[in-house]
Length: 191
Ligand code: GDP
Image (cartoon, rainbow, N blue to C red; front, side, top):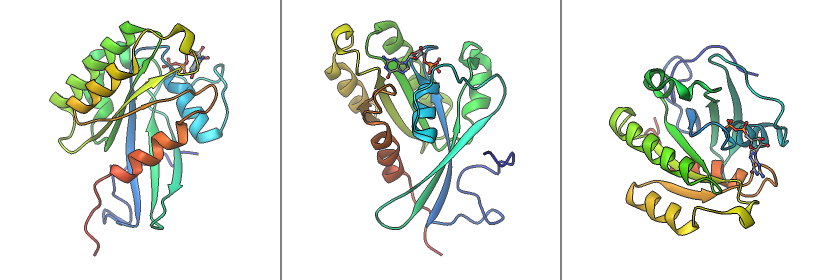
């Protein structure tokens, strides 16, 4: 699926950004086990398959969506594949990313704290115009909820992030997440 060649965000046609067809690098960050791989597989393949994990290495999946204004956005989605454990590698991973999706699990306050750590990292080392989303995943497990929805809303608002709760298991809000991100991308000027 992947082309194996990366030229950076918005750089197609030999480096000329095409405002009608954006191509953006998207990275996922968050504690291991919050559902990052499942969110990607749900979005790209329409499946919930916890056994099919991306293995180690710099692999990515891509998925293109069309917006109402007839523009398209091709997301090149990088999954950490467990490498979030190596904090020193993180800046390499999110270099050139136009979008960062920071995920926590609504049943895990620890994962919400870790999400806040990643937001601070991105504010320090990410590109200044990066679009950031905060995602409370596993929303289907509402009977086990330990992070109130309002906490996510408040934190995201304070940090200029888009916020949504999702379920990779039921597919709830997965497409909405990526559509809303696409709408928030800065557009290169039309040539
Ligand atoms: P990652 O380490 O962040 O990539 O997490 P995974 O995508 O591997 O998911 C970790 C575990 O959480 C798996 O056992 C999934 O079945 C489960 N999981 C992921 N998303 C959801 C969800 O939306 N709801 C529920 N109930 N379980 C989920």
